[in-house]
Length: 168
Image 1 (cartoon, rainbow, N blue to C red):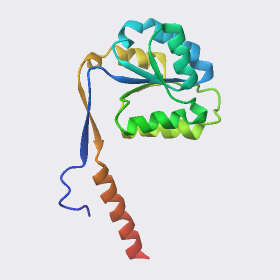
Image 2: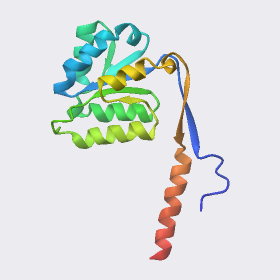
Image 3: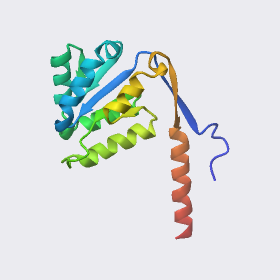
């Protein structure tokens, strides 16, 4: 049973009208992402952009947009992006991943997608979804993301482990 003094199960993270958008693409999808960014340059220029190493460099070179660079995905960039999501520094992700080819860092990709869901950020994995998200009326507005509070999660886990210890 949860601690009755725990006030709420949710935390609210405010997403500002100027979004912090991560751009990521697997090798076979980089051209598609660059074409998409070029087609949406005006809208994307209103936001803060970041991305994994090679993708960020290619987007910057081909579009003239400023893109904060993290490490390449297989070298820890996916984990860096995930950490920034957990810290509240990235609130939107465009990730064109290749569904037809296994990646050497698939566990990192899965962890990144899990963090994105856990922290309630919009994620586009293909052009159609990216188009829908970018054209949403919410892009130019503040938005409250609702996540489970860390206190609630910790309390729930502690109670679960305490119950398991009692039954042993």
